[in-house]
Amino acid sequence: MTRKRTLNRDVLISGLGLGILYYFFFRTEILVLGGIYLPLCFFWEKLKVGNHQFWMQLTRIIQSVTSPMLFGAIFVFALLPIGLLFRLFNKKERQEGSTFKDIDQTIDASFFEVPW
Image (tube, rainbow, N blue to C red; front, side):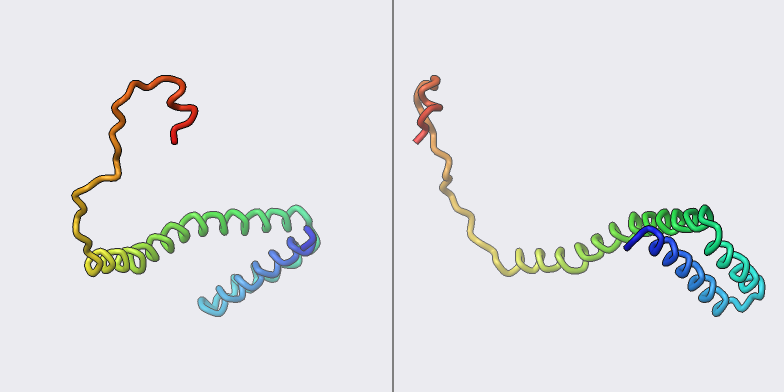
């Protein structure tokens, strides 16, 4: 998307947001603010850029809050119960032996050249 289209899109998002605010709160001040703010945004480039920066900052803040909450909820409500159920029903007997092998020799530089 080109920069101009992105800026115009963000102005339209602001208009939509003001319309949603008006729908829920039914205040004429919101209509007056939208009637003044939106035309000014379309004709004044700096206001349009400021509007874009506002939406970018808002989305970063929302992203930094919701991502940890979302992934935390996925972990607690999905992965943790599955892991606990797996441990509960797939109990294995402990193995007494080990795969560790003792090496009883002196270690010099030739030992690390061909270890197998």
